[in-house]
Length: 168
Image (tube, rainbow, N blue to C red):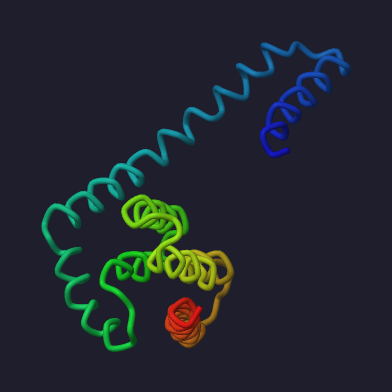
C-alpha cells in the first residue's frame, strides 16, 4: 500500500492544480526554484556530517570505542558484534537499521545474534533525535536528566532483550 501513497499524492496535487486552472508545469518549476536555495543551505552541513563520519571510521576511533565498550557489554552477556548497533541506535535510526541489516546478512536471519539485534532495534529509540525535536523550542536548561533516563532505559531494554533472546 505504501508504494501507492507517493504516486497518489503526486497525481492528487497535479489534478488539484489543473482543476483550479493553474499551469501545472509552471507551478512545478516555480516550486523547484524555491527548493534550490534550501538545498544550497543544507549542503555544507550534510557534507560535514559525511566527512566527519568517514574520518571517524577511517581513523580507527570507532573500532577503539567498540572494543572498549565490548568488555562492558560482554559483562551483561551481549556479544561484541551487537555493540555497534547498541552504540548507534540512540543517535540514528537509519544508521542502526543498516547495521541490523549487516548483522542479518553476516549471521543469517534465524541466528541468535540476528534475533537479538532485532530485539535491540525494536526495544530502543533514537534518544538524541527525539530529544532534539521535543526540546528544540524549550527555553529552559538543557534536558540532561531526561536524556540520561532515556539512555539508561535504552541500556536496560537492550540487556533484557538479549536475555529474552537467550532463553527462547
